[in-house]
Amino acid sequence: MTASDRRRSAPEHPWRGIQLDVYERHMGDPGVGQLQRLREITGEQLAAYPFRAVGVLGVAGGNGLDLVDPETTDAVYGYDINPDYLHACETRYRDTLGDRLRLIEASVDRSVRIERVDLLVANLIVEYVGAEEFVAFAAANASSIGVLSCVVQRNDAAGFVSSTDHSSSFDALASVSSDIDPDALTSAMSGAGFTDLDRREYPLPNGKTLVRQDFRTTPGP
Image (cartoon, rainbow, N blue to C red; front, side, top):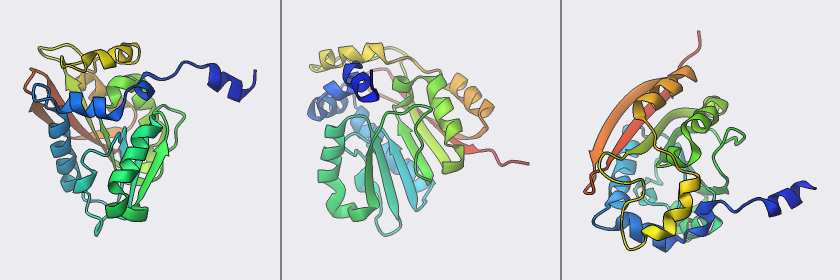
C-alpha cells in the first residue's frame, strides 16, 4: 500500500466533519460563552507578548485575529486540520493582514515542524491532541518557540462538550478528546525544558473554567 493509499483509507479526523458556522454558533451560545472569552484571552496574549511573529494552533475561523496589529506584526502563522476553516480565515482576514497571514493545513503532533515564532498561541488544542503528544510537539519545536501560551478547559460542573442546540454535532470528538489537568501539564512542560511564566483562570457561565498557561523555553547552560 502506498502512502497516498494509506491516507485515503485512514479514518477522517472528526474536526474535518464539523462545519465552522456550527462550531461558532455552539461556542458563541450565551450559555457557553467560549467564543467571546477566547477572543478576549487572545487579546491578552497578544498584549502580554507583543512580538512580531505569531503562530496560532487551531486557528479555525480566526477568532481574535482582528486584534492583531498589522503595523507591529510581520507574520501570523495559522495552523488547522480543517481546510474549510482555513479558507474562511483567509476570506475574513486577508484584507487586513495581507501577506502577513500564512495559513497551513496540519494536525498538531510531534512530527510537525512549525515556522519560527516569538509567540505561539494554542487555545483549546491540548484537549484534542493529548497532553503527552502536545508536550512532545512543543519539545520538538522548542527552538522555534519564544513563548507558548495555551488555554485548556477545566470541567468543574459540566460535561466535556457544553449543552447547546448544536451539541450532537460534536459527538465524534469523543474519540480524540481528553480532560487536561493544568498542574500535570505544567509538570510535563517543565520536564520538556519549558519554564512556567504565568497562569490565569477565566470562569464561564456553564460552570467550566478556562485556564491560560504561559511557558518559555528554558535557556541552556
